[in-house]
Image (tube, rainbow, N blue to C red):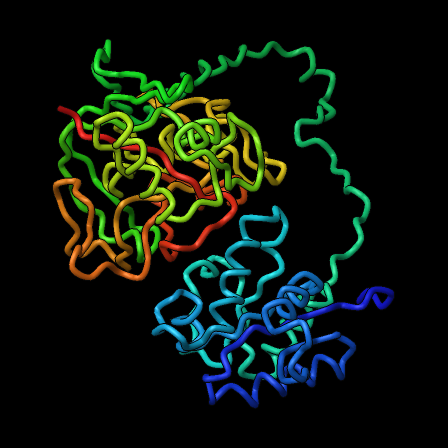
Length: 443
């Protein structure tokens, strides 16, 4: 039975311009309300005195679940691909969802993609593609959604019964006295099997030792440690998701990359302020947009006389893998991820000081988890046509609407902290749990 003591609150996020779905959205809300769920959407409200943005903030804050009605128009606006001035409501709600996904360790369970037709599966926003979705084109689909909202399983788990007992198969049988006195030949037991050899560990290529080219930059008394990354060739991407395909070979020249993500102390030493949500000098700086990080790179370059920049996406993955070809820099066993990363299972819903977990084979910390890290590249949905020399994939004459970031964060599951994982956002968007690290050309 559902819990009738607590009112279940639901908010529906959708696009008004998805005309074919307007009546369906209202019918869904009406039915949920008729069946005891406090469902809200903007069609029920007159223009609120506090303004729509604050009203939507309140709805998101109070709701137990947010139903995201996925359509082509909604997805385009959620992901910032709409022309300026259109779809501001969906863009605002998309920003709230994006922010909350990194701002609350348990919030991932609140967002439910809803499809009114099977074709709408192509229009689930990328940030919600891993979430369980509900197709409610028929009565069974609605019932499954209702069960989820009211926490009613389809099949009730039966109670445990008593364990059964059996006669042992090797119980001694009664023998005639003559047989008991008879001598028997001893039975030779076969030799114990040889222990199986352990499977070969994933091959991890260490950099040349020693690495004399590592250096430290002094930022008004705050250290910035840069690690030399040897040039080489590797396979970028994976076959796990479409936006990680196709795997392709990339050849890179040597470069430097930050030993840690940029910390708040380093940011303050260069920029003078601290935009981060969680405060602490040794914590990674976060809640910075791509545009903010470019300003930081320009400021530190002017101060040092060297050209600092964001790593290209190829440089980032090459440095993260550190010669490995597995899901993570240490292998495929995600049970070991906690030794290398702060992520959903161990972060306690916050960032942690840089460098507390194990480094990869090239001495880089926090490449998995803690904070996502901006890269220089524009977002492309697949790697077809990507550069093979490690350079940034950008069109200077017409930059794309999104930039790439990599690595996963404190709020992500292990699957989203893999070496090949990719994500995207608008260059002017700030998100809790999104930071960066620096890169520099080797000369």
